[in-house]
Image 1: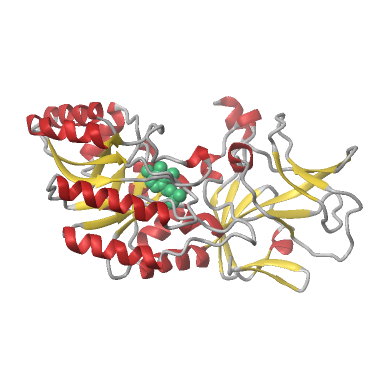
Image 2 (image 1 turned 60 degrees about the horizontal axis):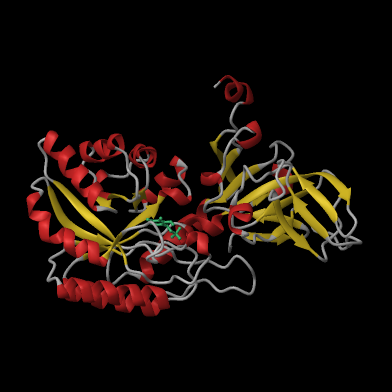
Length: 409
Ligand SMILES: Cc1ncc(COP(=O)(O)O)c(C=O)c1O
């Protein structure tokens, strides 16, 4: 995260000292660097410059309307997985013709929104869904462009809970079933197949699985002599959460993608989420209490797993750093935990850590993707604030949810 650094002992995001910021702003909250969002997006554009794809930001990774608006202004479209995300993307000013809709269980109501708003593609994930789209389009006297999301049966070699491209996973249509549906597709007069899509998983750090998927798609499209307007290659590009990980290098893959698009004469769509927004955000939290344990001390934070689920859900590692550095050391190992009544409400064990006392502050790093978007009201806790930093300025892009309203709802 290039926009995060210590100046002396104090942590700065862009030009804002977090310590100073905390004098007037209550924890826990998410805080993002606008500069980092913009540079991640422009880097992605640069990597695939030759191909000039449509980049549909995966709104599930962070669906804050202000963030969608920043990306929309840079030219991004949106990949949405619910009617709610679709309406948020539109509210953020993203044009319907830059929106693709994925998801295995889209409801009738959601599909009607997509049809009425005339989005670019509904990426169907089953024969039943395609038939339902056809029926709804017929009732509305429309002909709808669809894509089919395929399950290429490729192992993304990532955490099992974020692997989506194996035959065992619920996502997409198997190639066999796609071929058999294709034989009867002409019966369905209100849909038109314009695209194929794939998304094999998330946090993929090696380009091997992407190359394999590209081969599967290439072979299939040639074998079936499909004339497609779009091929949607999904997202999934990994970032480095720890110092010994490297983010994926896409240079080689981008050449293959360019060849593929040129030969098939189709427009490429990507759906990146994490690689655009993951390293842009911090979760700032206060040390509420410190409790002695037998083998380690518990640093009890005011942020909980309802605010940030990734460690509980995926055993994910997110480095925790102090807001103000010092040179003293904790005497024993520590575990950062949150207040939620679940043993999985914990954020990491450190054998050695600088001295922390109650009321100190820490930052959980790289939480921009699947952080706030996965948060919940579990334990009847209000959703926390989200703040956007731009150089030395800040703005609240989501206020903390009002507790009384939450209780009354
Ligand atoms: C269909 C689809 N597209 C794109 C993404 C974004 O993936 P990532 O954030 O890993 O780029 C996801 C997330 O898993 C997804 O399910």
